[in-house]
Image (cartoon, rainbow, N blue to C red; front, top):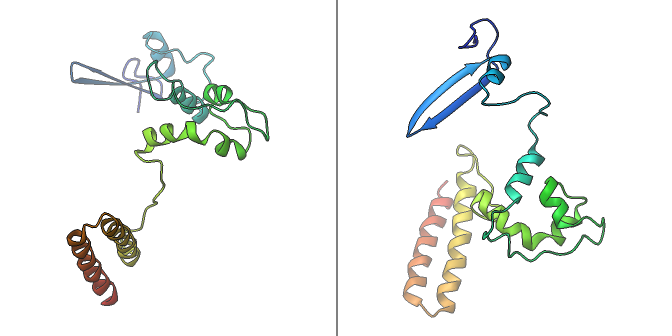
Length: 170
């Protein structure tokens, strides 16, 4: 695609503006993009995941990251949490354990959960999905029994039996 401004060079910059719910898109060459004054490409480095992560780690005042318990430094490599927040890189594998309490809120904010459950392919994972659901229901049933909510536990048990029958019928 050619630059929408000069019409001569290849458009390598995609500029999107949304003002008052009105979206405007421009496809520009680097020279025209710099000439607009909207962006500066001179001296800029390519996109870095570490820069993105470091930006996310720099909390605004009042966020949960301000109060997160921070360990001074990793015993194995000596790296401190401040360095990680600035650069988005750990020094060693032990840093994950050392700074784990501080990472939980970040991971939860980024992914919606701090527990990895993985994905199951739709075509091949039917049995696996059923087994996972049965396992989760058994945990819920045990919890209901502990709370002495036997009626709820019986409902969950029946649902487990239905799923096991479905699993056995395949």
